[in-house]
Amino acid sequence: MRPFLAGIVGACLLGSGTMASAADKLYLFNWTEYMDPEVVEAFEKAHDVEVIQNYFTSNAEMFSKLSAGGDAQYDVVVPTDYFVPRLIEAGLVQPLDASLLQGRDHLMTAFRHPPYDPEERYSVPYLWGVTGIVYNTETFPDPPPSWRLLFEPEANPDQPFALLGGDPQVALGMACAYQGAGFDCVGQQPWVEAARLVGETLERPNFTGFVDSTAAVEQVARGVTQVAVTYSGDVEYRKAASPDTYEHLEFFVPEEGSQLGVDTLVIPARAPHPELAHAFIDFLMQPENAARSAEYAYYRTPNEAALERLPPALAESSRLDGEHRGRLVTTPLIEGDALQLLQQLWTEVRSR
Image (cartoon, rainbow, N blue to C red; front, side, top):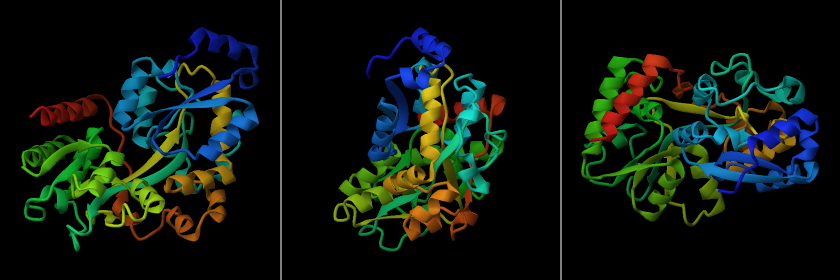
């Protein structure tokens, strides 16, 4: 980790009213392989700054880092939609200055005034994707398009498999979907039943562990596991970059339903360079940059004006009205006692 400027320096620059021109670095906390280097380079040249990226592999990891002082180290962070309210409640992000963001009008109606930020005060959507299952087609030539492949021993009695680590709401959401309660289940009864199922799953001899999305794809490619949970773009990104290496990998959205995740752009509460952060977010919202970001990461863009700049297949899948749309739900917002219960159940599951 590179050293960071003290918060007082950022405060002085902000007070001078020349943050964007005075700052020479922007600190970005991002998912891996999620920002087109050419877009970043274009911003650096336009603003005569250096963008320094650090990476996280789960929202839980990101939240812990910001809670431990990272909200004073980073200028822009990329949390998934349902974590935005948690960041707001914890005081870890600051309201955006709408006068410094000119690109919201480019967004599709479906991504305006979302439930996780209805007044659009704290976040801007960046890219979106879906959670599903990646598998080896040589091992599973015709798998059931279902969460059964993970949770039913009869569907996969002996092949190694992994589950997605990180946030319990996603992990239990998968079990809830399989049990018929929906990926967006909320409440003690469905969570307890889901936790019981996950606990039983961890005891199966062919369960290999929890891994993040990127590692899940790599493990299936190397044969460490044969089936795992990942995000759509992570599979597509690797198959496009190295078709031979990943030729036996395929991805599906389970028929019982899954997560539609919107990754957002926020500014931490004590960001060293908030004005420069606004400039960076606005830069990413410009149609040409939104299109390049989507095409680079193989995730979908929420930017309506960017669609005409995308390859036809990616433009069509970005419209949020494809064949899988009916199966997808956004992760519900939970807080207070409900969040505490969820975390307690997950701790008990993981401690077995």
